[in-house]
Image (cartoon, rainbow, N blue to C red; front, side):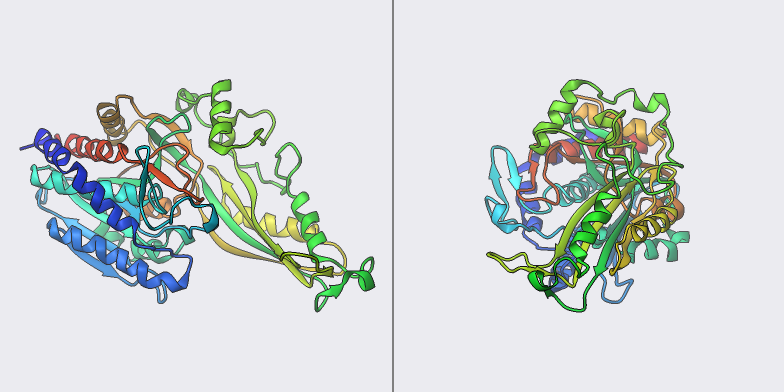
Length: 457
């Protein structure tokens, strides 16, 4: 019994684990599309069935009407005095659009050159599936920690179900260790331990002009054009050098400690790696900051989508009545989403042109979070990565956002670590998302080593 036995069991199940992982990938659990709500519930039930089979006590809670359920699973077999490790994940995925850019169907897992191609393969089903399998082997081998899973179905839409659940049940959810298992490797393809997670403000900017679409010949030159106004607003939000012009935007940006940035790759090779991963001809961003800083410690502002006027095939010369853009801002410590949103709204409206009205809607927000990279659990996870992958996890700020990280810190507590198993360039949220299959057994081994280290007195 012990770690060696757990690792042996995991290796023996290697092929079976792949098959079961593919089974979950076939579930189209898209939280953004209401017609797939039943699929989200099906994925939640799929996980619940497997956790119950491992001896977990499972509850599925519909927290908010019309939302997707929260799954909580507890195993207390290590005893009342043993520490508790809570593992977070999410079972929802992004829609696969544009479908015509997928080489193979997004919900039919396909293996090519050692990678499985499927929506959710890197974000985030690989992570929670590896954690589920590691939990089973750890329990069979006498692990000395109690285990809890909290898995949500609204991460991709910044839903409120899990944050509400954590707040309502904080007293009984306290943990000694919290694992935000929703990340991946660095752009250099090294295991990575997050020292900070960017927050976010996600908005829609709506511009209204004439009451109806107008003939651009009859009214061009006099009628206000929402597309023109929207373009003017967007152009006024950033300089060509990538500096965000929202007043006060950078006032509270915290500079990382030098010790935290030791592993950051500022070499030209990192720039070349980003170019390779993105397929771009050149990088953009704030002048005066290295690419590694722009992707992690600096806040951003990006247009994620635009709609307005005629966009079909052929010609239709109209001045549109309305237009819309989705704009997101990734925030860093110590920026406050409420303050940033208020300043953004005021600045956007100041850029409007005569004859148009502008409305800004907030679709979601999340606070940035800093993590203690010197804690016992952080050191344990870095050592576990090194033993399983042959290289120690580097320290990095994470460019992405985990909306529930702050609610976990506030209501669950304990030492928090954030990491994951997706390789660099995995294509999450885009076409042909994929996951390196070798990372699945190595990831299970990493989690086993981590859990058994925490078991030691």
